[in-house]
Length: 331
Image 1 (cartoon, one colour):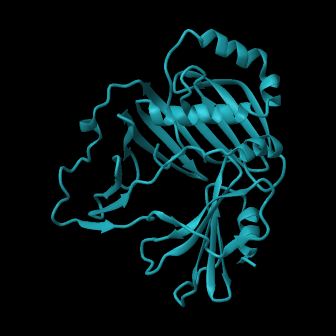
Image 2 (cartoon, rainbow, N blue to C red; image 1 turned 135 degrees about the vertical axis):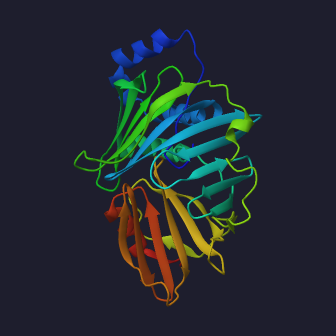
Image 3 (tube, rainbow, N blue to C red; image 1 turned 180 degrees about the vertical axis):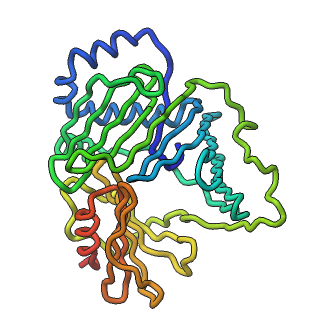
């Protein structure tokens, strides 16, 4: 789904009673199964991509709430989506197989970006599968109703202070992720996504997912931008003090909007979250350093000699700060 943390489903089947019985009777067995957490995440991720659904989504970041209308279509191996804001500034996001268009009618601007692969969760390697059990306590327990549907709750509680806790409410029959919550060390919700109503296996055609504007109005500004594709290569940079459980899943040079030259981009993941590291030549216009936070997203910027280092991800401030301050040239 859009960048509102995923969601969606699977097919109906006669296994409903079996699935519910397994969740109610044997959550402890699931908690002890090292591979079950990864299997559960994989099922939910696949459901988010491969099912057709529409509904109303509530997104909370800190004290800020927003609602959107979402429609998702999977057709011939491709995903198509439309996200329409229902409150606040008018916004519309339309994803096709090749690109993403962001419409801002109040500002008379449309931003066009290349489509990048979007997953609810980072892809899991065998090493990360083991990490999930090593660095998170996993439980699958019965949940309450969300958007009129019964759910099961997957709980990922960190074993250290270097990551946040996660709660995922999913339809046990379809795999649809109905709600997700990011919690801090005090158990407080810092970010949340939830369907308030949803239709699964909805009849959606591509015409329903077209922009509200057949063509861009003449008085609108069209901006081409967004992150370009990563050219995989050795950037010459590394993070010397990685938090336990995080491994590098991507490295290369990326072209960013507003940047004249490509910047080094490295991505590290513990299997649940991904943290990005950017390294670029320092310029006199880059005056903002230190920590900024928005909901569960933390960003830390620091200068390293002639370079600016930016680290960002859904992780505690201490995690991104440690990583940013330990970015060094490879020996």
